[in-house]
Length: 251
Image (cartoon, rainbow, N blue to C red):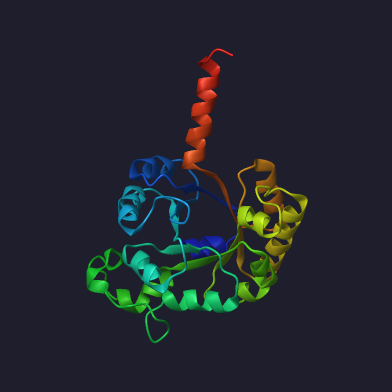
């Protein structure tokens, strides 16, 4: 079952960020039992060359991968699709026009503007996948990230764009945009995210969100979120190493 089909299904989905840039860490996390790993290129040292070994490392595991580029640039989208990324999470989307541009960037002409380079692409098996060009778009999903006041105001129109599979709410940047920098669990932020989740769900698209605190994650699930990112490799390592040290260091 594809990621798009799972997003449209009835079961809640859970994932984690993989931001270390390490294929070794990515493989460890791939075997953990979560539904999805999100490789981040916006706030982490991941780029096109470093993502390839991570995609290769997790390929044998029954886990989906989303990749978040640093920006929704059509050239970068083309490169990510060509190396085999099937599911994109694009940050800082504020308008339906932006969303339509991203849909176009993921499709070959005449339906879009994706450049044709199948013979060079890992995604096509370097030309070994029969009919790749004709059917490439069928296997792709686009999740757009709404994380500003303007994005919240436009979330209904963004979710309505044909070709957008899901809308991901980013509480950290939303908190800053709403005047509560560093307070993603401020009551105003929680309420805004819940309202947006309801709007997206009502549109028939999957509402997704970031929530590391379990009570918050479950609150968003109750509000209608389909996919929740509940942790990150680097935070697990940081908190785990701190907890280990605290058990053995003299107080």
